[in-house]
Image 1 (cartoon, rainbow, N blue to C red):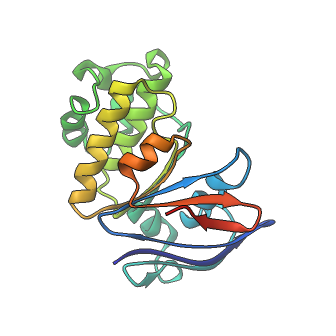
Image 2: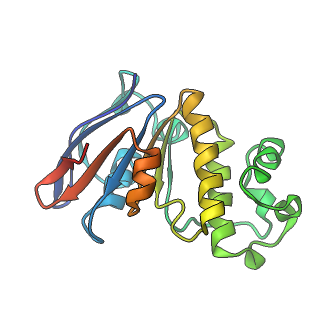
Length: 198
């Protein structure tokens, strides 16, 4: 099944409706400030909103907020880091270690201070932090914006593996090439809501 969003309205935004089937990646694009990040946050129940959001037919209203956010994980463009060491943020350190190579990250980075990790490395580590929780649905806000081509392709390959395993991905991206490579569907944010690109 997957994620079903129907008539979601936030403060001055919406209504928004879309679906993200399991095993598929749905791309979201649009001008800066048009509400893409807000929509992801509303789906994750991090910002006030009204409307219906279902995962595999289960309403968001019927589960606790922590349980919903465990199953539907939002990864912002710039994630927060609250511990000094990278590895302290990982719920499953062995699962995180297994993802370092595929993400083009060195094994020692898990024991590095967060302060010494680059922006691009933090982007990939934030995605690893989300992936080790084994979510059903990933809400990704420009996960490759600060990455070079090789790292971008590495991230896309890892995401494809998760899609093949049955997860779903709703991803904000401004790159048409990435939309063509990854997107099973593509929506553009407009003043009137979401418009299907394909």
